[in-house]
Length: 334
Ligand SMILES: *[C@@H]1O[C@H](CO)[C@@H](O)[C@H](O)[C@H]1NC(C)=O
Ligand SMILES: *[C@@H]1O[C@H](CO)[C@@H](O)[C@H](O)[C@H]1NC(C)=O
Image (cartoon, rainbow, N blue to C red; front, side, top):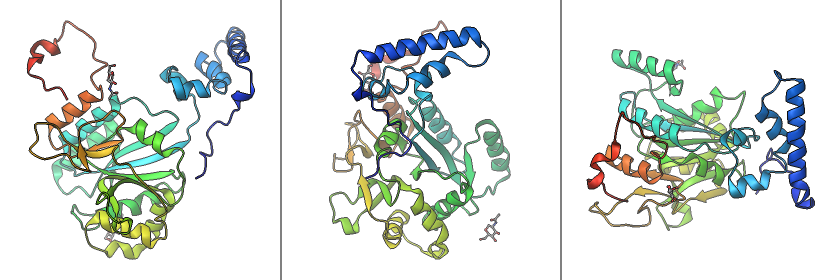
């Protein structure tokens, strides 16, 4: 395992703890002086956090008390491209996913670009409406293929990304479904200290089976850039047919890169609640706090319960315009 290459490697343990407040105070003083002398050159956050982030590194990761502005000042140490494979006409689901991802707490020291991915637009209305979405959100990737299930869309996606971003490669490329909700901060935290080569991360399926037969479930998986690049360069894979996610596992083996394999059971799972007629098992259980991804969010109610569990409505402010809780009594408590 390699340590994250660009993470700050400041050794504040070598300093006696009393000197840390002194360093912060003197940085603040410098910042104030700087602002008085050059008021238009920098904003306060740049000065304070650029000079104190070293002494605060431990405080940030353990107590999480720094503001969002402070977090954003920290160097990025992991970059992930996450494609949500969907169809052009899934407008409502895209709107919901955008909303859910935009209200999640920002991942720290990570860039995760979530993009909706589908094949060519064949209908007149989709060409217009999707163009408008692209103008407004800029988060859609259209592949050169026709919509299909198990006919090479996974190949098309993994083949396209390394070519599109060869000038600025990501550390990892992921693929997920439009009925999966990844928690991006948790995902970044599990990946940042992992190897940047031969990495295959997700939910190992079938669970508890012989490793030789396992592959990452279609709920979502992440691979290191080298694996995506190998797929992209191996044109013959385009014509292989089969169940796409197990086929993908076979490609990772064929590349000789089935090495740094990380299964996230139980932090990735299918949605389950007490009202469902199925049993809990190794891949399906109740929502849990340190979730990386929940899958099988097939309807609005499942999405709502999941997002509520993860406190997506916490930012709602009281207003005379609404009273959301007026009819709360019938709510199911997960
Ligand atoms: C799209 O795919 C078709 C069929 O494989 C190919 O003929 C065409 O050149 C491709 N177009 C682009 C823009 O890559
Ligand atoms: C949601 O917020 C409550 C209250 O602040 C907290 O106790 C709970 O742990 C949060 N849930 C999750 C999943 O973070």
